[in-house]
Image (cartoon, rainbow, N blue to C red):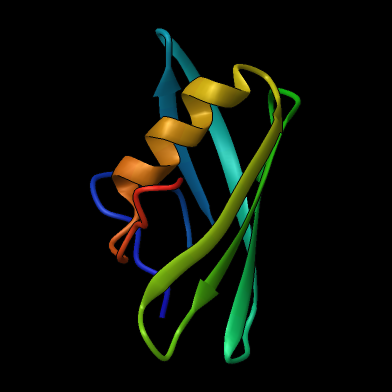
Length: 89
C-alpha cells in the first residue's frame, strides 16, 4: 500500500499539492507488484513523477520527476511519502 501523508485528496486517485504558491492537481496511477511503480501526473501543469517502491520493505527505490519545478516537486513528494527514504534520494 502506498500512503501519502498531509495531502488534500480529491477522490480516490487525485490530490493537490501547493508548489511555490501554485496549486497543482495530480493523478496517481499504481502498478502493483513486489516492486510497485507509481506514476504521478500533473493535470493542470506539465509535471510527471515516477516512483519505484519495494513493498516488501516499504522502501522507496527510485524517484524521478520531469517538468514543472521538478526539483521542488521531488522534495515535496519525498516529504509526503510514508515509506523509508534512502539518503541517496
